[in-house]
Amino acid sequence: MTDTPPPDLPAPLEALTPLLDGYGYPLVGLLVFLDNCGIPVPGQTVLVLAAVYAGAGRMSIAGVVTVAVLAAVAGNCLGYLIGRTGGHRLVERWGRYVLITPERMARGEHFFTRHGAKVVTVARFVDVLRQTNGIVAGTTGMPWRRFLPANVLGALLWVGVWASAGYLAGDNIGPLYRELARYQLVLLIAAAVAAAGLVGYRLRRRQLARRQDGPQQRQ
Image 1 (cartoon, one colour):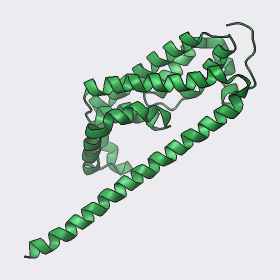
Image 2 (cartoon, rainbow, N blue to C red):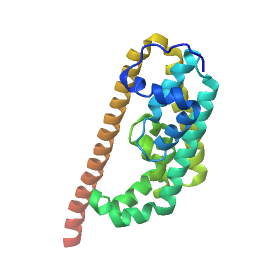
Image 3 (cartoon, rainbow, N blue to C red):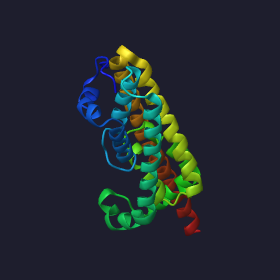
């Protein structure tokens, strides 16, 4: 790193500057890895900060992107392995406490069979999904041959977007970071609304099916 100071930073980025100054690329790799395997640490934040440093000449953007992509892919693979080897046992033992019944798990498996690759590809852009999509994919039995390409593509897109934003933003990093964070919040809300709508739709279909079955059984 050179001694060129980065631009004025928003508070979430500023808080990580002493750690990034001290540990550089290993910190980027560690936090991105953990953030992608189920542990809610500021992996995305350190990625943006490292890209800002690269824009100021304090780090290599190629090095930041390479480390972040490899760490993101590896973290999601670990999450998949955790879900594949122990996810069902965790659901069977603890799922009822968070309203995950065997029936809901079966529906989740069916959903991932049809749409899992799309979910894994875009999940990193939504908090919570970024940390859990690999675990869910493994738990629901998504085939490895479908998971891995989606994982790699999602890592490339996620790192590419946030690294480009940090690297090119310069002195505009504060407003840009706030706008992107707001955009991410909208995505999270949209995902929650879509999930609620899907659940409501399925419940409605089930109720209609029961009403139709009732007269047929009486006949």
